[in-house]
Length: 425
Ligand code: UD1
Figure 1 (cartoon, rainbow, N blue to C red):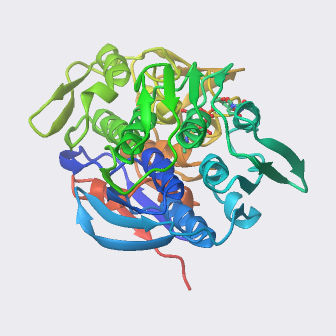
Figure 2 (figure 1 turned 180 degrees about the vertical axis):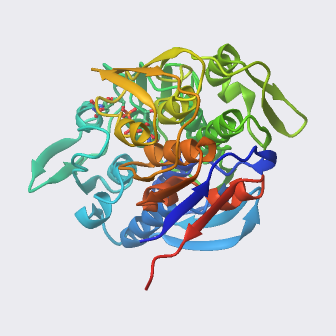
């Protein structure tokens, strides 16, 4: 297995192009199932999760072609003229939980879907009960057999009022997609407001869907008989941008994040400002640099527009070398401190109490051989390695490849001493 080797202590300086958002691209790919016409997506990042979703869509009968580049990413054309299958098999779903995003569109288009239950994952049990209950409200008959969700709607889906008891990102996306082809009106109350949900809504509207309240926590969708061809460009990845902002801060460097949008990162900018890091808009994106020393700051993750859970591990890496103490509280997932033992092996001083981690800043981390169990935990260890004295080897980097496009190339171009070490064949 490949690894990444980092020699820490280099200040990062330069410009980094932010890729299209993984978490926007995945539902956008899935929404091609809603029409028999071509969906053209630009700025699609080149990531392992995108390949997994493409493989799944291919199994379902979607014709996919790459057609050049746009923005920092690729152009993908997807055409689901007819569906070859309505089953999302276990071997693909277990690789990526976001495969659940085909459930709503398949059911809406074909009146049936069979999708493997995603099961547990490294950051918690992450059930899909809210997706299932909401589809049942739209009239689907759902049974769970042999590890599969079996869903049928013989007479098609029917609009309904759905109130999510907690904010769910892919749950909102699944129901929004399903409702675009349901009969009548669907209201989603307590909808997720993440920029990736908004991006999907805009693409669905371009495909002919009628959606009101986009960007709010109350969406009203009026079902249509058919959706049609559209072109859409994937929104820039705020989590990638936030991660590189932490890289600038932790190395006392200065990075311009090309394409990054302040409107998506306000909560992150506020935390960084408290810590002494400036994040300012430029003509092309955002500039990040230290203004004062680096100070410990309390952080609590929340649904958007709050601080994203997908940046919690990276913020913790930063707070490990800040002056003073920081309390980092995770409110979205119950088991999302898997990076803590590895950061401690690099010299961090962290104590976990239930869903909070007390981080006492240390003057310096030291390089070590580390491994991580999920995507954002992995990148937090890379950030720690950039700041640490000596060499850090990051193992199991297939997690990184799921969600970061050419991470080591982007960082090396800004002065980091980082390389991918290919495993011996
Ligand atoms: C999405 C993101 C993920 C991010 C997360 C929270 C994608 C592909 N993934 O994941 O990167 O970390 O949002 O911002 O966009 N829950 C239930 N039952 C359900 C659904 C969710 O109990 O049916 C719970 C989850 O266990 C979790 C919380 O709701 O505690 C929020 O999860 P959710 O927003 O659904 O996360 P995902 O959509 O899976």
